[in-house]
Image 1 (cartoon, rainbow, N blue to C red):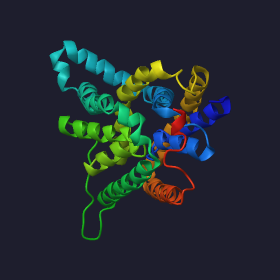
Image 2 (image 1 turned 90 degrees about the horizontal axis):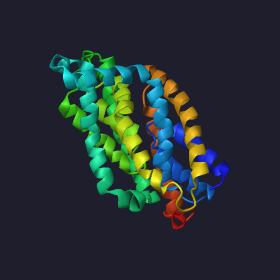
Image 3 (image 1 turned 45 degrees about the vertical axis):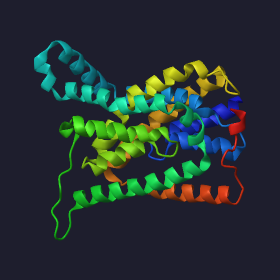
Length: 290
């Protein structure tokens, strides 16, 4: 991998990690369209450390408060009813599904799941799911002529059941094209949470999974055509761009819907099917270089 490739891929990772459009799919597609080698699952996991560091900094006040309350709850029983302490436990519980499935499906994640036809399918299907979830949220918020405005849930209403559902939604993102934020936000909206609450918990829930996955894949960073230097460079690029995207996205969702991302996913998925169907692009483009 050249330094230019690592710059572009780091840029793509930072731009797409927090938007509900799938960063892993875009890294895969960028390489395929450019005629580069598929950077692989290990490269994706490691560069996500950069974007997740942006999450740690952006949500640092929330994280410090949650970790502090959770730590105190281990010693002080009276703290176990504290919302922040409970949120800490729910992040741990919600991380179990992706941890178990990530290890179990490792070979599929690095192989069959990177087929461009599967990515096209997940882009479209999850785009539709996100669209439906967004419409339901908009209907609750706006009410109607014969329908009262319905108050949606916040993170204070989060319990073990919803925490596990969030966790299974996040685990779906092991398949490129699904999108970690897209799946968890969709799940949150379908469970009745506000857009801001669903997005915030999506980012918090991703921290343990992404950091653990990146640390696990560090051993493979220098294998194949992807060397340490370009990988670290891409990770720093992803961090800088990712931080800016988080700040923009959290402001965007307070007043706007997710429909622009829905349309984008569906159009991209259909275009990908056309390109593969007409043999303009191989469904396994770049994979031979792994």
